[in-house]
Length: 241
Length: 341
Image (tube, rainbow over all chains, first blue to last red; front, side, top):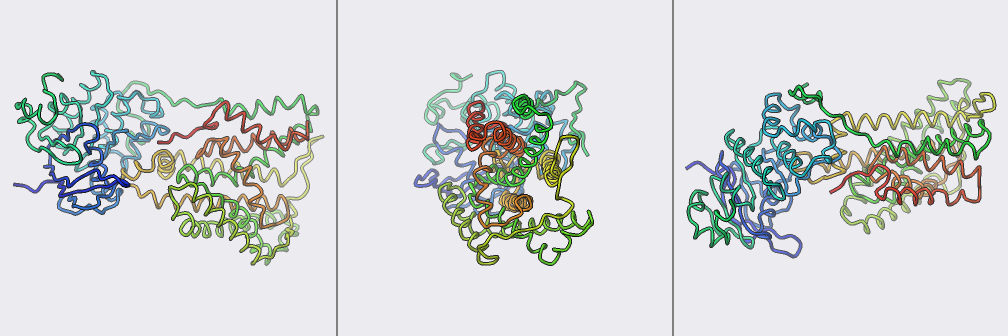
């Protein structure tokens, strides 16, 4: 079996006096979309921020493409090829849509073919190209945040709750965009609370609770196993379609 | 350059242009026009306006670095005043050996002297700024209270160091010959030095605007003001940017110090600290982190001070505070608020 692209082993994270992650172990295979599920406060966002080096793991190991990045600085983690879309989207509202994309392409101008591909995924961004990103709606900001993450080739995308607070029509657009990203061979770790979206996209699923991994496996198994859904998530997929 | 870098996409549909918030920009001309009937004489009004613009430019030069440091690094640097004083004193490095250039009957030697003083001041304050950031500011990132206390302490130490090096007595400095006197056009009197100050202020402002809006480093600074963490997550080492901006901010304060020193023609170690209240007022009025806001705020404050000082001198002392209060009632985040997390 090929070595996973990302591997977390016994990762603990403390934020001030709070112990948030309690020995998190999981691995992310290349060219697949893995969904990280869990209730609010389960530690999903902390996991992504710890991988990005925005919060330092207090113990354990994070390996990316065989290299230990546990103590690596955030810019170096990004330079290693990990793109990050935070829950807050964190777009630069004073910068135009174009400037947000230009800044995200750190290694140089965006290739025209990639730009066409990005704008094909998120056509709404064209209309606001030269406007400050602060003028965008919530869904459009989310699109920009993801477009920014793929402005240049990345080896892994960490995306935190991209459908949160979006209208159903926007959620469907987002799912289509992620399907296209998957089809292009991107490796994605997607934090999601919307099980409908998660099940439509995920190859694999990891479930967290109270800072620990409580389940890890194929998404198809979870979709087919209502008892597992009830036990881990307290819901069934049918109720959320 | 890709199509994107050129600001276009492959779509044939027209792209909307960015809207510009013009309202705050109209305040300055509106204020000037409003003051005209109260001043009465047109020539006096022009004289007051040019003097106000010159003062505004000097305040802008002293404040622009602080607003960037404040906006990008979230550092409340009460020690900024020391870079103004130090820049002013750095003129002595040039005025010592080249004192004759100030009296020379040559425009080029006179302006060359000013240029050398500016270069020396920016060099000295830039280097001291780098040391100040490393020793005094860096240990207190993230704690405003500690920043205030520590940078105030740094200011006191640096002022005493100036006393130790150059003495505690005020030092007179000569204004280069060409910059003395005034241009007289009809009844309008415009001091030459103030006109030069307006020119230098405009050059710096235009340079900063070009840097911030037309270059990648400018994009990074603007993005870093808004969300430094996300800038790091995109792969940029923001700490280096912080240091560069702090050094540039210190150097700009040094430049402001030179202009301020030649305006007063006297050096005192406390001259930087004396203008810090004004500096803080303009960066608050302008919107923390906004260079454009700092520019408009500086001119606004200086013009109001000049007009009020002429029309109703008793109110001159409170005019700055009054302007700040009115602006903040209208726009609590300042004239050009910069978005932050």
